[in-house]
Length: 381
Image 1 (cartoon, rainbow, N blue to C red):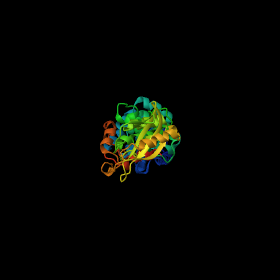
Image 2 (tube, one colour; image 1 turned 180 degrees about the horizontal axis):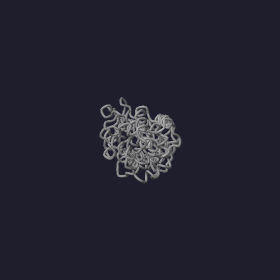
Image 3 (cartoon, helix red, strand yellow; image 1 turned 120 degrees about the horizontal axis):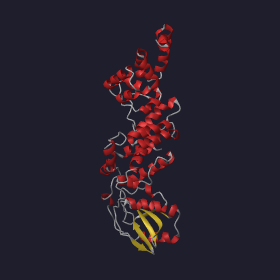
Image 4 (cartoon, one colour; image 1 turned 180 degrees about the vertical axis):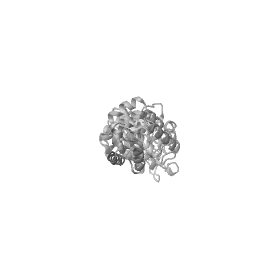
């Protein structure tokens, strides 16, 4: 009999072991704690599993991923099988060995399994026990919502996020990362820049916010013009209607202004954005508005030069002269205006590639409203 077995066999040894097991089992979540203690006391190999592979012990004690698999995992553990065989039976990646019991609660979620991920994730494990559960939630959600690369990025960057940030708040970032590597899709064409694994969280959040704002153009089917007018020239200035989303987005980029946030403004049909140019050079942006119960002549809501700087006098005079070229007849715009809301067909068209690849997550439902899509924005604040 070995010295360790002899110690276990003696009354004092059994008592000491019982105290140690109870202390170790107390680190597991309450629903499985009693079962963990019973298993560890019943067999020395189970005691070892509790210490060396808490994830496996949690799964066996909790009946995860299914009662049958948990029972088979317990049989392998009692037989002294290699840990990799036990992990395979329980559908656990081996890199979970590095996490303490405090990391696990309920069924263990889907996690990356590639060898490369296992090698790299070891560098980003939490240093504090109480951070382990949140860390694992971040890794699991990021993998489920995107892929291995995004999960590694999230695992590394967790310390950069406020403690109030939940794993689900990364939904907008995950969507950004997924579309960033798939340039063939329509939603990808609205990206201001692509996500990469070197980006800082603050920059990623800013990019995601800009992208979601840009996506509002196809979501709201903006811009929409209830009244139309051809481009024309006044006093050497060329007035160009911006009738498509990318026209407005290009104008916003060239003029370095906030037109990229004007999807909702231009969705109903009573507000339009025009570009004012001279010799092919952009000199001003015009925001005009039509009142439903007034004449067809629009009012000038705003005119601004590059970086929203004020325009010079000749630009302003030409703009007012141009406004008067609109037909001064009464128009019943109410018949042509649209309600502002997310267009279901556009939303499904934009998100369909993601759904086909990843399924239907609760945070990106098949049928949406402005409130649902706004939740992606809220998670980035």
